[in-house]
Image 1 (cartoon, rainbow, N blue to C red):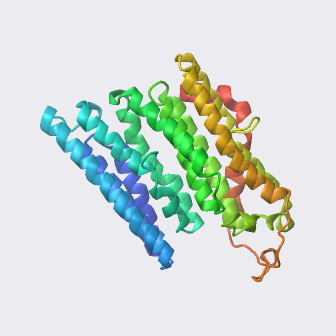
Image 2 (image 1 turned 180 degrees about the horizontal axis):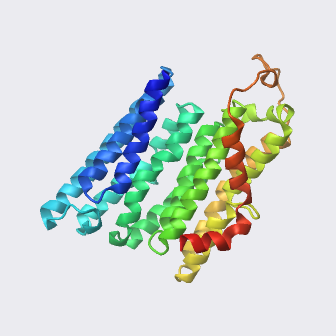
Amino acid sequence: MNPYVLTVLLSSLGLGTTLTFASSHWVLAWMGLEVNTLAILPLMAQHHHPRAVEATTKYFLTQATAAAMILFASTTNAWLIGEWDINNLSHPLATTMAIAALALKIGLAPVHFWLPEVLQGLDLLTGLILSTWQKLAPFALIVQLAPAIDPVLLTTLGLASALVGGWGGLNQTQLRKILAYSSIAHMGWMVIVLQYAPQLTLLALGTYIFMTSAAFLTLKLSSATKISTLTMAWSKSPVMVTTTALVLLSLGGLPPLTGFMPKWLILQELAKQGLPLTATIMALAALLSLYFYLRLCYAMTLTMYPNTVNSIAPWRTRSTQLALPLALTTTIALGLLPLTPGILLMVS
């Protein structure tokens, strides 16, 4: 892609998210979401592959539906109450429609079906943008709406997403689909604690972004899209395979890695709020996710590829990818747990 066009598209992505962050009026927030969607579509379709075009079309239709629902919800609220302000979305019909639309935007269960299919059709860097940056603007709106939303609805969305994200990833062989289900599960963890401790939601979102970035950049560096490709990675770069296995375990939420911190604090908050059953279900759902992360670790570190590979041997090709972003995100994804007290002081 032409570097000037790429610069314009990435700037538009930043502009769209910033617009939504800065807006207090529903129409401006909607405009930011639309700029965001329109900016990523050329990036998704740039390879002109049928899978990429199909993924782009699915993404466009889903996001357009969600945007129309947001506009409809805000117009309904303005009609019934006379307020366009985001914080004054108080009519139950309007709030329910808005949260349904925003859940569709970020891929929360039960409106998650588009996410694995879309992510599977994209290259890994565009998939990284879709899994991280594209979640920020809708999440900013969800955080602002949280006080007006029915707590039962938020809890249901969170539980469903954690369970579907764990359950859906069990049988997958495609790495992008596994990361899509991982994203759904993490979104569930963020939403479930939103009504009680929004700062924990933002902490979970931050750690998720760093861990997912590390995972995507590693897969990009090793050009892996299937589990079977990962089995050849240990001979190419043993150190990278070791750190990747740790990043995946961090995504699964094992101590003493960074991913344990948000899960631990969220379960602690749910127990404080007198919701032991919800906390137990979330912890069990985390075990489902942990299984497919362990499956990837096993494939990478303890197996050898059984067949002769007809393609060019991957360890003979030099990568042009910058190693610094990968090193930075990997370090953050592995080593933040000891800093938990300091991070809690910063976010609270």
